[in-house]
Image (cartoon, rainbow, N blue to C red; front, side, top):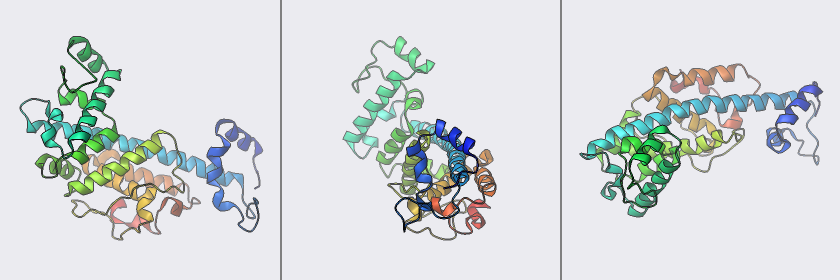
Length: 287
């Protein structure tokens, strides 16, 4: 590997660990030798890949934040119509699996108890019967306690809602999907992506453990060409799902524009490493 700017290389290694950087160049190693690189490989290529991956994660985190906040609000708004009070989250009859429901409630109360938000501290200080370790006690209304839930918790809770609940379908519909099962899959995979991005992990050349499924019914344009099973586990498929959901709940978010702009200023990045197909920007979702 050649180093056209050794100072830039030293500066990058001073703030980014070798083990984090090494996976950005694995495809550039000559397979016919032990550890030699292909001819003409420059460290500037690695820097560009790392910067692109970082900027992509920044864009994704902002978009996922939009989806997460909207998801939380729509759960609260729709599910609060199922009961006269705001304690619907305690009602096991609304959920498929009673054990998973109980686990969710206890995790939710744990998160609320350790929250540093003023509304959580105020509630706990004013309600002496509050008990974070049991289902009993003085429990806050959903619109208060659900704010303490993580994205992963919300995803699991939604998946456990009874499939025939009209509120479950209404939440999915607000995001432009007619199948709550499809929406549950998308939210679950986006939650996994959120954890990767939040922990500053690499998206470059990554495959996720769970794949995005093609939506059966949808309000907006999706993709003309079906993605392969390999592509469905790549970041591109999740990026498409994020683009679709952002367009449904907050069209002004500008996610698709940001993605296209990032790719245009880094034309040398091999986007197939993220699962982008040739001509992806011509798909109706991106136009």
